[in-house]
Length: 225
Image 1 (cartoon, helix red, strand yellow):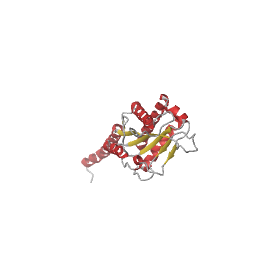
Image 2: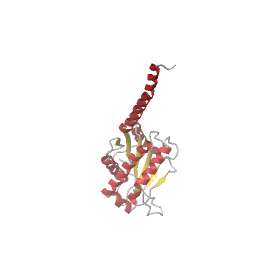
Image 3: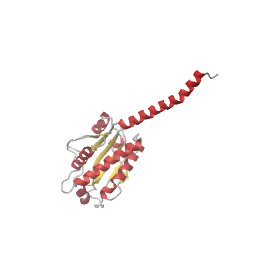
Image 4: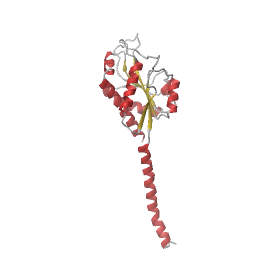
């Protein structure tokens, strides 16, 4: 039997439900807004490992570090913390880089490299950007594919051609074995190509490339939400 007291209690229940629901969504929204993502930008090679070297002596390790620093400097997203695996010219093993990811609880990894053609290659004019994602052993395969596709879209205007998204036959330790976060390795042009080297030597192009990477990071985390 419904008494006046019971009716009052039942009338309050829907209101209470919507109040609880409101704060539940509000807390979820606030958490989303206030969440800080840690992104590691890995400058490939370093120290006694020069990486590829151009005809005029330009070293892959130096270009990669310059690009990494530019990305960090241009980041204006307060919800994204950019940290570099190396800030100076030093030698780091793949294991050391992986430990760095674990220590900093990275949410995303983008490793920067510069490509080259083999000395005996017939494709001397090969140029452009390549993006490598996990071959298949990483627990973040699908997320890494999403990252790779967003990178490809945003980096396309840099060299006026769409970057290739690839998976190497040989494993890449940092993106296949890190087990910490989604990742992609970006070959930012060919050091064996005079056209690509000219672009990479341009401060404006480096800023455009850095902003394309930052745009990718923003879009990736927005997509995750």
